[in-house]
Image 1: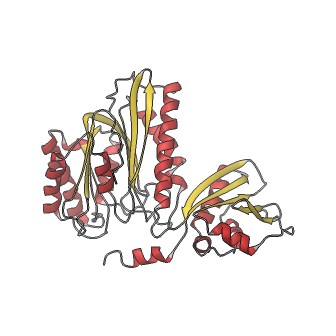
Image 2 (image 1 turned 90 degrees about the horizontal axis):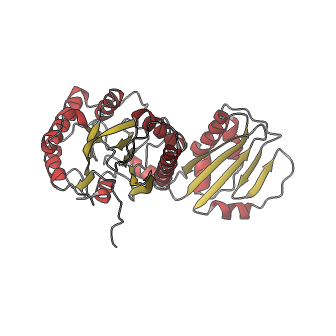
Image 3 (image 1 turned 90 degrees about the vertical axis):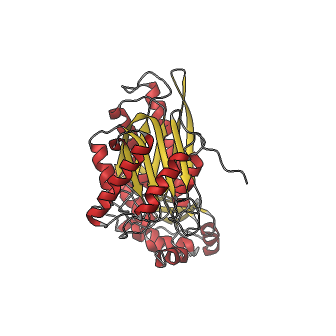
Amino acid sequence: MAKQHLPLPLGFLASGIHAGLKKTGKPDMALLVSRFPAVTVGMVTTNRVKAASAKHTEKALKAGKKIQAVLVNTTNANALTGKQGEKDVLKTAKTVAEYLGITAEAVLTHSTGVIGIPLPMPKILAGVRQAVLRLSGNGAMDAAEAILTTDTFTKVSARPLMMVGKKSWLTGMAKGSGMIHPNMGTMLVYLLTDVQISRPLLNQALREAVGESFHRITVDGDVSTNDSVILMANGACGNKPLTYKGECYEQFVKALKEVCLDLAKAVVRDGEGATKFVSVTATGAKSDLDAFKIAMTIAKSPLVKTAIFGADPNWGRVMMAAGYAGASIDEFKTSVVIGGYLLYNGGKKVSWSREKLKKILSRKNVDIVVDLKLGKAKTTVYTCDLTDGYIDINGRYTT
């Protein structure tokens, strides 16, 4: 089967190589490079126990550094590795910079994998050289494959744009399967564009997009120590710089939201051990926050997720989870609909069939809608079922 093509915006190169980190021989190191210094914004995990790479990235983003290269290694998270981990990040960045002829300040390094083990630096540094030699304008899919860990497929998305007569691209790739929950980051995500745009607008666009995508998914409720979302804009398409909110900015934001939502949904579909994709919508809430609390509480409930896995028609678990979400709810007004099938309506008698509900829950895609009938706010969150496959993967993760 031919490999899927993923277009890179002008001025970007990418590679994905095997550096000897994975015993399987599969690609395990990726390099993304911009020929020009790129305005770069991002969001880093809110976990207070951060990997060395996440700390380094957070510092660079706060300083407003323009970035030209991002190196990603898998298998090893370089988290809880003490001062040595931080030194290894700087050494890796310096090595990438030397090979590319750029400053070390323009390099980010990201890691993902097992926590608590020092980086195998001889393999990392040798891999850097190999990754630089393999850089190509056609290397995006190689990079997207090389950042995967327990993922079972690559996660990519792209949109073409027209910026006042200038053709441009927005391209994204992500890895993520477990340790997925909001509050950024919850995975590694790389978004690349050749649009020329000011840092404040780029930063606002990313936060809008993340708020409607990566902050609306959950697999297991765990927030990673490592993960980040990075957006690089190198301006290579030659458009007039976007410095204010107008038609072109709105077009850019729309494309960014679409790409981010594509990637976020792909992460959920590939949740560790998952067999079903689940949409949970809370509508009729008093506020956006209430809607989010209820949808997310239902989405991350182990009892709801296991019921969906087993196609168990135990819809009461949905109301149970909604009730402890910490949001306004009235059981005598609320309704619950699964797969278009009304199951609960404010305590009034509802005729429903266990067999019909079981068939609905057996589908690959399951939609849950809870209508609170208290207001106009609405939010949708995406999740997956919780299976014995998840336990199998994570019960043997390091062995």
